[in-house]
Image (cartoon, helix red, strand yellow):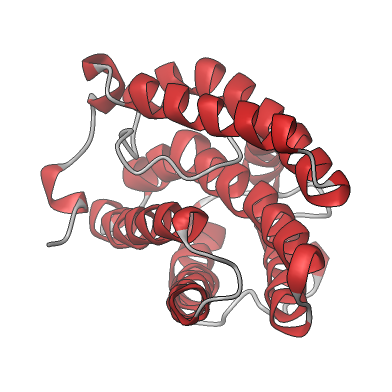
Length: 232
């Protein structure tokens, strides 16, 4: 089995293939992780926010569009996607704790180190095992069709961690609209707060975070989840 990490684009279905789109995001993910480690103060926080705007829409598009197909076309698709969903769940939980930690604290550094390890493990699980299997199972046209569907969802997905919401349809699909509106409003407010030291923007963002927490706990948004996604 050959990892998709360095395979030519034409072997993966072309530039709009879901495999190429995923790999492009993984390259940007690595760049942002390194940027977080290289920055400090307000600039570091802005870089973490940019990382979130990549990580969570990317994962949401995987869980909503890509994983259901993998469960359908790969013999061990259920097992493979469950492993990734567990990683996503841990990442959501750790990012939620990171949001509450002081950016200049040892706790923050420790949490981000754990997040970095999980993100890189997630990439390797996908590129080295799951995606080569998917490449063998689908033709180029199907990969491109998935790529467009994945991109449409990614562009309209939540941008923050939501550890309570289901990692599977229908719960995650139902959560998309309210959480996307809240998250993307917070993205704007947090940028204003960090750049301009605005207490008003920060206060409104905190209020929206609390609203998102209440939305997450609406029972219907947990439908579809496998209980063993959550690891004690």
